[in-house]
Length: 340
Image (cartoon, rainbow, N blue to C red; front, side):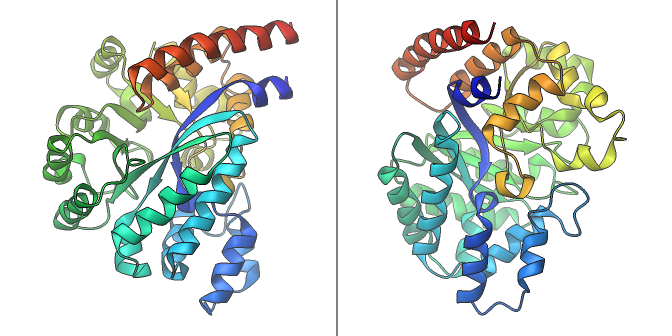
């Protein structure tokens, strides 16, 4: 089964560039920046379970240590090597340009070009970029960032996202930025309810921001009417089996049974598993898909549907979508026969 989970063809739609940094790369960046952070503290970021520090702190710290476009190129190149070894054929990667510009001091166009160059150089995987609004910044800064994207958009840039902490940062705060992105032809997604925020964040991401899909979205289940509407519309939720919030807040003996991902399937929602911050979560695409079956009770038919949900939610052209649906379905079925 391990080979099955590794080899099944996948897309990755919910992954943050700074959350993919290898430990050795983090240490190199700290050394080059003369950052006063002990190696043991860096290593603590990569401990799974009861962490002494959170992922968001690690991401903010990386902004302070990234100094050159080449650093972003290295991170992107290394990341694309990793999921390619786990059957990922196509990856859309979130990146926060506001942090890069304001903290790292690298202008948007130069940073974007370094990331896009690594994507063009990648072998065996297609990389695409999603600039993401810094939710902890101001709506005016979000508008400014979308302006950067529109003015210097590389072909690899496929849409707009929003991330970082949702606490007291509801979707409607950023409606103008999303409207601006829509007018420029950018696809849209949004993190919603990652940290147990109210189901209204899912509703407003869909109805106010006009997103094509939802990242996380777990508390949608708290409102049966909204859940039914999402099922009817076929909205895909890019879920994260290794989500830190539910690992911390649900009792260990009940975690797998009570996790929203299990109940999203039972409610008929379309879900697709992803790694989010793979190196800090200590998860691979292979493990993420394995967790869907092992921990949340997804059957072979469910996994096949998840695979196709990812293809349908990917921001690709329609001819490619239909071709991948045919070819990947045949591959999945062949792999399935090999383990039965």
